[in-house]
Image (cartoon, rainbow, N blue to C red; front, side, top):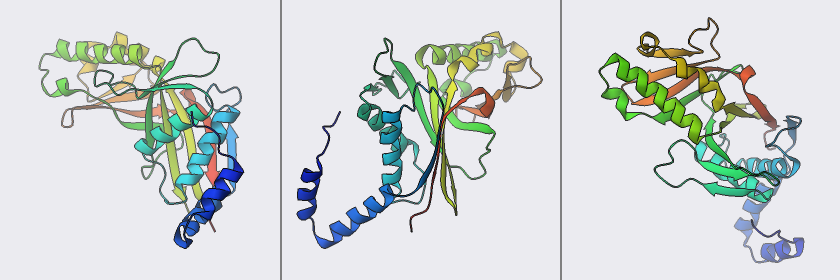
Length: 253
């Protein structure tokens, strides 16, 4: 966790900057002062006051230099920085064997860390009611499996491993418009994958698998992409997720 910067130290640094550097800093300051409409989930374990203040500062700083919403890499950095600023323990996953989650975090007072997969999207035409994850994880076996029962077994095994390794998926959705950028921070609990344990052989052969598989109104769908050897989640109902925060950043100027 970085030590807080005093205003006096900041002023000394500003005095050492050149004219063009001062211009850039001024744009950053203007961005940090941009009006924001904020709506946080009451009782959220994530968007606590300290975390939200730190995360919002990074959202504003990003838009000092970019009109585009945060990418996944940028979101990962902002998410972990906000956790550290809030005094949480943060452990980024750098091991190739930990392919299902990106970071483990432990808010103050908790005994167990949460292992989180971080995603971000600002794709055109995103639904306000459904969440889409274009790549949940790679699955190279998709192109090799030939037996029907083997395909079923591998799908069930993959989602069991995912639930065991990852506690939740946190996704930042960005909706740019002329009125500014609207952000939505959504948590998709991996417990939603539990019905996949009951996947039958016939349903496993479908290119798109509904979850629950025996429901006429599934709350998400799994798309098995043989060409790209990846797993896509589509049609995730926002109603079965937690929206930890919403922010609307007005355009600068």
